[in-house]
Image (cartoon, rainbow, N blue to C red; front, top):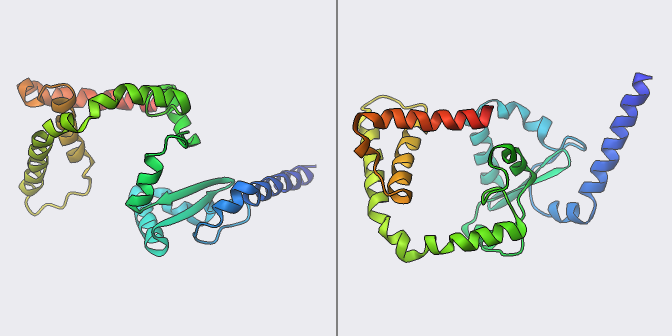
Length: 215
C-alpha cells in the first residue's frame, strides 16, 4: 500500500513538473542558459550541500555567474529562479510599471511586514511608491551625499583600525555604519549625539529585528 502511494506521489510530481517546465512559461524560462537540472527536484538536490553556509552559497552563485553571465536560471522543483547580473537588464526590470508583482519568496515576510512597500505588488505598490517618489527626488538625495561619503570614510577607517586582524564577519561592521547613515539621512539625527547610549540603541534595533524575524 505504501509503495503504491509513494509511486502515485512521484507520478503526480513528475506530471506537474512536466506541465510547468514544458508549458508556455516553462519553455520561455528554459531558453535562459543554466546548468543541467534533475527531472523533478531541479537544482535543489544538486546544490543542496552548498546551502550549508553563506560562504559556500556565495561561491556557488559566483561560479554560476562566471559560467553563464549575464543571466542564468535555476529550478527549485517547479519554481523557476532567474538571476540577472547586467545593469542594463536590471534597469529594464526595475523601471517596469507592468511587471511589478513580487515573487512568492516575499510571502515569508508577510507575517512580519504584512503588505507594505517592500512586499506588496500591483496597484497597491504603485500607489504607495507614487506617494514616496517626491522624497527620492535627485535634489533631495543630493543633500545626503556628504553624509554618505563621511560614513563610508568612517567605515573604511574602522576596517583599517583592525590592523592585521582578519575580519571573518563584516556584517556587524556594515550594519553599524548603515544604521548611522539611515538615522542621519532619514531621521535627521546622528547616533553620535546619543553619546554613551548609542551602542545600547544599536543593540536594541538588532534585537527588535531578531524578535520579528524569529518569533
